[in-house]
Length: 462
Image (tube, rainbow, N blue to C red; front, top):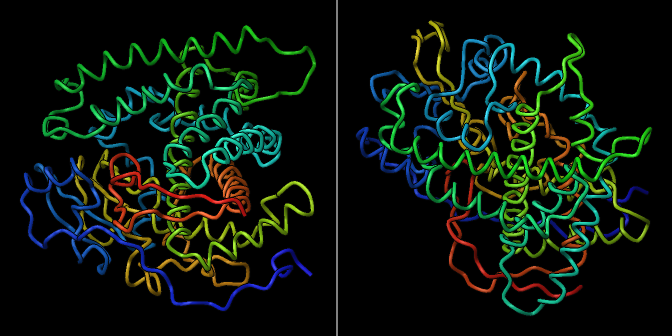
């Protein structure tokens, strides 16, 4: 008998359809679209984008294409991916935080970084980091246990937990001392500098906008902070001949398999920033949405709790023994993909979906749209974890892209799935989670798929 069969699953019930934001009107001016984008990019898409294969439009003097078909997505993100780079607006928003790390690098620099980092993110390497994940999750559960039966901000709790996991897996030290400062950096940037301004979209990348000046001052403070974290980790030292104990060890020892080249100090700093920020924020967001969905769907929550408790009764949890928990997480990533949009600018002319593409035209592949597209999914807006259970027909490769696809697929995908699955199982295996108020929580697309508010939850011990 498998773990999944070790308890009696409840009878399947009517699928939950969580609240979603209103769709944009069919006609919208460029200025109206920009105003909507500053609030949430998700709010700029109308009903056609959820029904049609390709949507062609114009935006600030260039053609734009929303792609919802496998052949077109494969062409842009795999077959001819080198012709499609980050958009200038995307670079302006992300570079002050991530520098020239893996997420933003292009061409030879990207290939060098990808080859060099790959060994640090294999399943075997990630397995050595699981104790860090478990210890931080257990401490979060102990802290929440002190606040049970009281209103709890689970979004903040998940951010703190994911940040603690990021700090321990990166540096092997707790983030109690530096965590508040790191969270302040993230909150400051998200509130003040992450939203694209009109001039960010209009001016060439080499022409600084007023926002760019503010971002440059931010980057000086941010890189100094990251350098301090690296110096503290180096001061802690490493036992001679001992195996790597964290990502910093793995990345510091990494060498390009073709050239033997290591990362410079500046390059290593950008990789550290990329892994901490991209990893902790996206995982925290995914865990929040999973807890929100489970609070709205108590029957599914009880099924997940039964699986988690059955596994925990037989030893430390392992992701392979949590198929229903993983299915809940996969369905959460479908409904609320943290990276809701992949935006690319054409470096040169091309043909996509039979249509000519000129240099500087913008290609949009939006996991938010693909994951809710009416041609690609049955009941696309409903929460149905069974879609991802073993034995269910797998989704089309280009219909489900929570981590992207192709050569630039997220290098930390396995790490994130292990972390989120184990954490979700331990949290729901320990606590029953309920919403205190009935006001809907709506997703907004600003860098990641964030909630428009942090609702109060009530947690009770099982």
